[in-house]
Structure formats: structure tokens, C-alpha cells
Image (cartoon, rainbow, N blue to C red; front, side, top):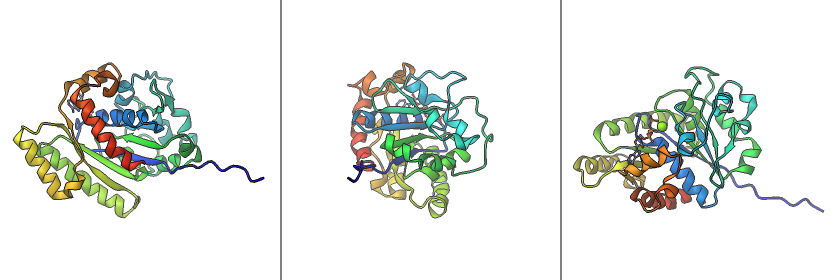
Length: 261
Ligand SMILES: Nc1ncnc2c1ncn2[C@@H]1O[C@H](COP(=O)(O)OP(=O)(O)OP(=O)(O)O)[C@@H](O)[C@H]1O
Ligand SMILES: [Mg+2]
């Protein structure tokens, strides 16, 4: 008799990036991961930023002996498996960052993460991978962009941030025409947005003009509960389910589910 074939769906990889610091990348990554996991998607969050804040946001304690994703960039033969930890949240795992990893350390290879994610056990264990990236243009960012199917760019709607978005898109076009033809921009996501502030409306309009209105994703309004939820290591949907940030993440979730149906 033929062995039963279990269907393995292709793993969807979403990178969150903006070269500008403090645009909400980590807040977005942690909460997007929690939203999708709560829908039953098996999510792996990969934290490439050595600030290591994703583990903090999910209440995962890291010690100097905790295996981290950054080992991969020194010893690619290790694969990702040893660095994956289950979080307190069902379906949500994390490959945390190594705060002691020196940028520039490791191999000069942009494809290490993509090769590790191509291992069959990754698509057997997970439906979605979400990658948080450092606010820099380095080999870690390139590894994320070369591994991803989708890119989400959070930006704070003010003029300097728009410049950061334009800079990132220049890097992006190089990647899409070179190493990763499968990469698509899912969209630009206004973070800490406030419709009553004129400059916010103006910058949002500029992004829509430059990249198309369909590329402006449902934003996350300014809400201090996001900072508070981070401090106690809980995604917003559990920390303050009635907050406006939780409401915004619930709206965003519907969009995210279209990327990984
Ligand atoms: N929608 C929001 N409303 C209020 N505060 C927010 C919101 N989004 C993020 N923040 C706060 O803004 C600060 C920066 O956010 P975050 O760390 O997620 O940005 P980042 O892009 O990951 O930063 P870095 O570039 O340093 O990695 C944090 O204090 C966070 O709590
Ligand atoms: Mg960050």
C-alpha cells in the first residue's frame, strides 16, 4: 500500500524592515506573530536585530547560554532548529537574537538564512516565518530580504521617515532584480499614526502617490499600551484587548491572513 502523503504547505516568509530606527518594526513583528498564532497559524518569529527586543516583547528569558539565530551566521551547518524556542503562546515560537553578536562578525554570505529556511523540517513545523530586522543596511538585513516572500515596511508618517522608506526601496529594487525575484512588497504600514495631525496625512498621501494606494496598509495608531505591553512581555491582544492598538492589530490580521491563507 502507498504511504499516506501528508500535505506540506509552502512556508510563507514575511520580513519587517526599515533602515530608519524606531519606526515600530519590533512592536509590529511581535504583535503580527501573536495575531497569526492566535488564528492557529504555526508561526516562527526570527529576531535578526541584536538588540534582542522580540524576546523581551514575548516574555522569553535569554541567558548567555541560550542558542540564538545569530549562531547560524558563524556556523551555517547548525541550521535553525537548535535556536528555536516555544513561547508561552500556543503556535508561537521564536529564534531569538544574540545581544553579544558583533555586526560584521560571521560569514559574508547573504543566503545563509534562506538556505536554513529551505530545510524540509521548517515547512513541516511552521506555516509562517516573520523576521524582525536591524535598523541598518548590513548582511543581516540582506539575509532577511533574500529569504522573504513578503516585505512590510512600517514607517512613522513624518517627512524624514518618508526619506527612509525611499532609501529602503532602492535596496529593494536591487534585490528583486537580482538575488530574490520572489520578493514582493506587501505594503507600507503607518505606525503611531494620528489622522488629526496634518503632516501625518500629508506623508501618508505621499506614500500612496509614490507606491500606489493599495500599498498603504491598515496602520497602527499611537497607543501607549503598546509600550506598556512590551514592558511586561505580552502581545497587545492579551495585555489590553480593548485598546485601540489591539483593535488596529485585529484589522491588520485580516490583511496578513491574505499573505498566508
Ligand atoms: N503605535 C505605537 N504607539 C505608541 N508607541 C509605539 C507604537 N509603535 C511603537 N511604539 C513605541 O515606539 C518605540 C520604538 O518601537 P520599536 O522598538 O518597535 O521600533 P523599531 O523600529 O523596532 O526600533 P529599532 O530600529 O531600534 O529596532 C518603542 O518604545 C515602542 O513601544
Ligand atoms: Mg527593533
